[in-house]
Image (cartoon, rainbow, N blue to C red; front, side, top):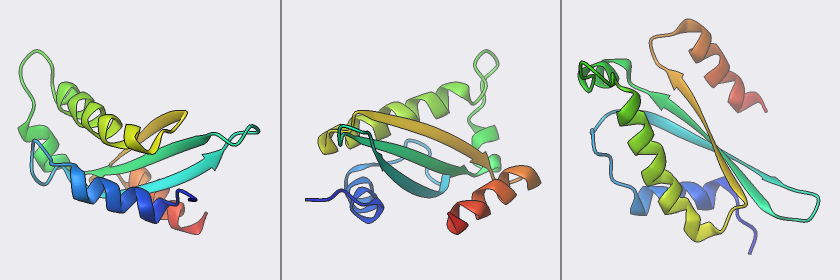
Length: 107
């Protein structure tokens, strides 16, 4: 069976629960195959800046929130047996990030 971005989205939607509801505004997935045919997944995540900032603590900021989210997503995606999973984050309050996010649809 070919693993497509649509299949990945269905798996994530069915099995991933956000620790901080609303943190993730949207996710897009890009799949690649290595020369040997192994699956690599790029996870592009659009983060809600307001929710991100509300998770900040004095010592860790929102960094630990994002790190926890990525670990949970990685554990969900392991069932698809990818060789690698790479995360790319975009903030919804950054014009530059939003331009990059919107360009993903053109690829």
